[in-house]
Image (cartoon, rainbow, N blue to C red; front, side):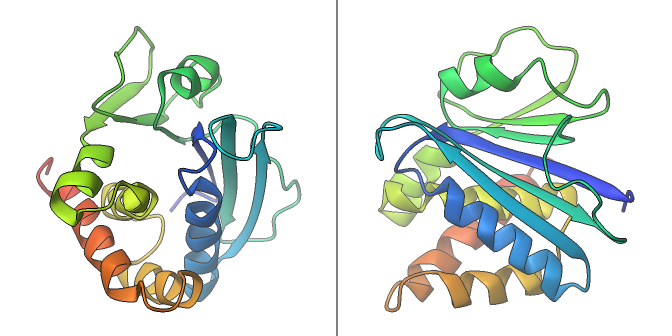
Length: 178
């Protein structure tokens, strides 16, 4: 792992990206790394722009903000257009398949994250956890075991099985790319 990995999760309010960021940060800590998570969302709690950011490092984190992320998740067109040009040179952009791909110098991986949540899991509200599975499998920034533990400790009681199913579905989406 690089010394410092910056992740930006972006979309609209209500998509659970803040929870996804918290889960990734907690998983990193469970893996013995340092992590810091921050969030930003518009005045509308649901529907407005939303982003969560996570910095993961094997050493001390001297600056807690994401400046040039190596990983960008975009679940809406607005999020993609807003953040696509502010990436690390070697960064990857993970896009939901509903988003129109535009030119960028970064590698783009497009997957049906929202559709998988809606059709395969039966609840579009778990797209955030599908995305955590995709990021975990694709980047190995956190281990599967740590991500599973973080999910179980953070999701609402009674939804653990649903969320683990969503996580595994995301891992499977990413595995198909290998």
